[in-house]
Image 1 (tube, rainbow, N blue to C red):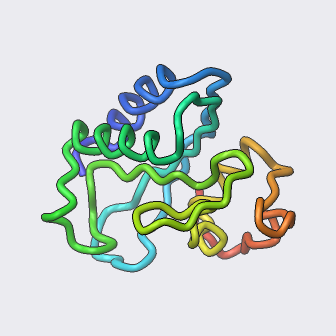
Image 2 (image 1 turned 45 degrees about the horizontal axis):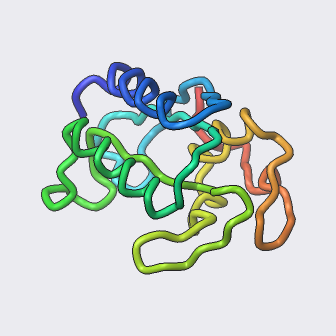
Length: 144
């Protein structure tokens, strides 16, 4: 929703101010997965060293989503939204709480998540199994 490229630039600046060793993947344009009656998405991954807990980071990211215009209560599931920030991994932490699951439970099924993430960290390992994520990618993804 809005101007996705401008939103990514804005949130990138905000995220860059949260930590050190900040890196961003290039931007990937992808077709929507579940609801195809909406515009394409722009997806990007970031890595950074951050000095807060996963739940503190989640609160910060939720505030950024609201600042970008996200209104969770008004959204249709898998529908368009101004900004969606997911915590995919947090070092070697494995977390399963009501509001936050790390590693993100669906990341291995989402090429639009794995392509940008593996661009930044191709040797990344699942903290639960020690396995790599590259095996989850399929050639059929519409990424460009």
